[in-house]
Every structure is written in C-alpha cells, then in structure tokens.
Length: 422
Ligand SMILES: Cc1cc2nc3c(=O)[nH]c(=O)nc-3n(C[C@H](O)[C@H](O)[C@H](O)COP(=O)(O)OP(=O)(O)OC[C@H]3O[C@@H](n4cnc5c(N)ncnc54)[C@H](O)[C@@H]3O)c2cc1C
Image 1: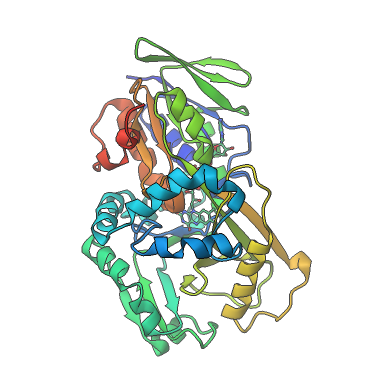
Image 2: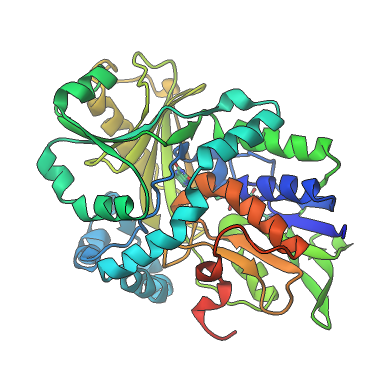
C-alpha cells in the first residue's frame, strides 16, 4: 500500500529512511530547515566510523565515581557544564544507572549489535546506488593503546564485544608499526576490528543520499516540522513552520531536536545532546591507513578529503550554549602528538573546527519504533555515538514498520515507551 510519508530531518537517518520508503513505492516528502549533509547535522562532522563493534553504551560501571572530575574539569574528554547540571541531572542519573553493572552493559550490547552488524556493506550498497560508492571503505579500524596494561583496563568491554559476535585481534608493537608506520612510538599495543569500515566524507555522503532520494521522486521542503495533526489514532498531517502537509505517515529523525516532536506524538523521551567536536588539519603531512582511536584521547582519527579529522569529546551543556572551541584545540593537539610527522605548530588557516549534537538517550539505545498515539508516526532518533553506522539498518527498519512488515531485527529494546507512561 503506497502512503505519503513525511521524513522529518535530512541527516543520515532521514536520508536512509527516505530511500528505503521510496523503494517500497511510497510518496516521500523530506523536511529539513537546513541543507542535507550540512554543518548543522551531527551527520556532517562525526568521526566517520562505520563500526560494527560500537555496541558498548557510553556509561559503564564505575563511571559515577568520575562525575566530580567531569564537573571540575571543563576540558576533560567528558565534561558537564555546572550551569546545565540542574536541568540534566535526571538524564545523568539514568545514564549512570544504565551502565551500573556489566550485565546491563551486555544487555545493551546484545540489543545494539544487530543494528550495526554488517553496516559497512549496507552503506556501501546505498552509496553505490547514489553514485558515491567511493565514499565507503572497509579496511578495518584500530584502537591504539600506550601499553597492554591500558588495554587491560578496557578488557571487560572487549570481552562483551566478543560475546555478542564482534571479532577483533590484538596487535603487538611491531604489528601496529607495520600497519601504521607514522604513528607515535608511545603506542605499543593495538586492537583491530577487521569488519570495521568508514565513510570518507559523511557530509557529502548524506547530501548524495538525499539527492538520490530526490532523483527517485522524493520532494524536499526547507522547513521545520512543529508537530502532528492526529485524529482517531490516524495521522492526518505534519504541521510545519510554513503550514500543514497532509500525509499518511511520518518519521521523526530530527536528531537531537526530536524531543518536542516525539512529545507531540505522545512519547516523553529523555533525549539529550552529547555535544562533540572535530578539528581537521588540511593537507596533512601524514596519511594513516586506517581509522584510529587512541585510548588516551578517546577520539577517532580519519583521513578525509578535507584533511586529517579527529572527532570526539563529550560535553553536556544543552542545545543552546555557545561552543567551547578550546575542546577542538585539545583534539588538534592530541592529533599532533599522535603523529610526529605533523608540524609542531600549525598555521591557523590549516585547521577547521566544528561542534555538533549527538542525539543521545541515557541508556545508549536509540528510539526506533511506532509512536504511542499512532503507528503512523515512526520514531527513528537518539542514536547517540552510533548514528552514522546504524543509519543504514535503521532506514530499512523504518520502511518495514511503515509497510507493516516485521522488522528484520528485534526492536523491542528501542521502544520509546520504555521510559514509562506518557
Ligand atoms: C564528534 C562526533 C563524533 C561522532 N562519531 C561517530 C562515528 O564515528 N560513527 C557513528 O556511527 N556515529 C558517530 N557520531 C554520531 C552520529 O554522528 C549521529 O548519531 C548521527 O549523525 C545522527 O544522525 P541523525 O540523522 O539522527 O541526526 P542529524 O545528523 O543531527 O540530522 C538531524 C537533522 O534534522 C534536522 N531538524 C532538526 N529539527 C528539525 C525539525 N523540527 N524539522 C525538520 N528537520 C529538523 C536538522 O536540521 C538536521 O539536519 C558522532 C557524533 C559526533 C558529534
């Protein structure tokens, strides 16, 4: 049955959802006040990782002990702004509780793995279909550690990854050097996930996917959705800043801005933004062969067409606060320390910085499934640190829900209603 589907948000999740809905013969309208793949999106500036091993939620046992440090150190890899603490406290409590025990972490990992497994191949197929197959590569991803002892502090998370089906191999200092000769010698241990892939340019990829959706017949309107007109448990229209759009179904994929829309569809969800940053060094003197993540920097490093990108940091400060560019400078400085071949000081015009909003649920799981008031509205937001990798399968599941087909993976853990009554 063909329906008129309004896709709200043209980030990676919206782009994939639109294409999959079109494939099913629906009429699709895509709404976004910004440009597809534009800098307003998390999908633009992320770490480029298509990581099927991204199954460990951000909160793990013992994290609560570090909260005073997060408050005291505004430049640590995870920081919480004092002024935002009263507002974010309930979310933060849920966040810490969801990672209170390793059993809970493993439960989340089991739920997430099917969403990210095989993601590089899914993205590659989408990219090829959109004429940008060269943007998706699968060369493996490497976590780098100063020593084996540093790896041991994270061993539990790696064991859980193995138990849920992720294969990874250890690299000693020599093997690491062979794979990444330009890496600083202080890194002497690595873990490689060979099934991992990456997107060379996420902004360009999303823009190409949306352009492909338009070539398949999608209409794009540059406006923001404000809510829904729902009558007798059926969706009649999406309301926007520029009037109503009559439709039969809608998908909420407005990233970190999805909370009010979810509420308009009957679900009060604890969606927060975990703000993140990137720094890109243009014309880098070094060219790492893989995506890399240094354990002492907690950031992803990837060679992109614009330069060497390092992306990371978690800052809990809400959607409105101004960026703290010092955080991007920390990333840049760590990058300089990671590759001795980069110059010690860089001309300012060679470095471009960016800040964006991860759409984050406190339990590290997205909201993916029908809304409380009507199954005509589908939630597809809250992917936190893993929206790029999870976007492709999310799009497929959205289409299955719109068509009334059973989703290809279990989605009960992702129900927006898990947070309690409306
Ligand atoms: C520093 C950093 C590093 C990251 N690294 C990775 C990584 O390596 N791998 C990975 O998988 N994930 C990574 N992520 C997470 C990933 O980028 C996000 O989870 C993902 O991009 C979210 O996609 P989205 O489509 O849900 O939202 P977005 O990309 O944010 O897009 C949402 C869109 O909705 C639009 N919108 C907002 N309000 C409305 C409205 N009312 N009506 C219509 N449209 C609206 C916005 O303009 C925007 O274009 C990272 C994130 C950050 C910040």
